[in-house]
Image (cartoon, rainbow, N blue to C red; front, top):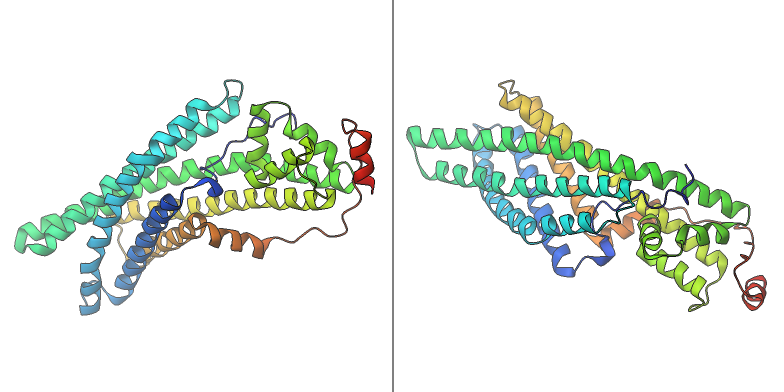
Length: 337
């Protein structure tokens, strides 16, 4: 499908990293960090042996991370992610049918995220209560905590991971051909013509273009065509190419997070069903620890930008780009020079 003709069909997974307030990024990184620590401790407990002294000591720490993480997730979801994802869904242009569908998935994703909070809080609170008591009461509370942690959270992880994977796949379905077509036009000297068509004429077109190349690159392209900033055409091409690559990295990273989430969710449900073993417990802890670590990479903007820089191969030997018909003779002369 021609990416210019389908430019309304891609919507962002989350609010662009560049637009997140500092406090929000810190809050999300804190949640991710606690999740990484919690699941890393679980991995250590699994290999130490639940009945060993080390395993028991580690196991007594984990409920605190569950409780604190659950409360913070609940606050984050109720205060920001759920209401804002719903607002984003409602504000999608009526003609953007694909956008409505994918932003709807985004809202469902945030509902699942919000559900993690109470479930994790309950798991942590019952485990803390179990550690504080003895006998039959302690055993009952610890069993309830385990069912919540493995059964309820496992099901939520499987469902949320599936939603995230589908949404990333849809977004990549438009990003990949858009990037390929841009590079093809660039090699033919037609990048400016391609960008002019892609950026469109109205707010809806511009918003869709931003979702493909990122806010920073889109602003540079807009400034170039409006004549408010002098930018070398080859430099503009480099900015746009890296912007698209960065958007693709977001989707691929989210896809791997989703797959790890589903693997951990399935293993958790298997564990709850009574097929518990060291191998299954290890799969649960390791997959969730890796998932949380990737969330840290995704949510920590400077780390994510450094990650993109490591993967990106800058364009070289860019051919001269033809001026576009809509440009004035003076602009064309400037470009040619």
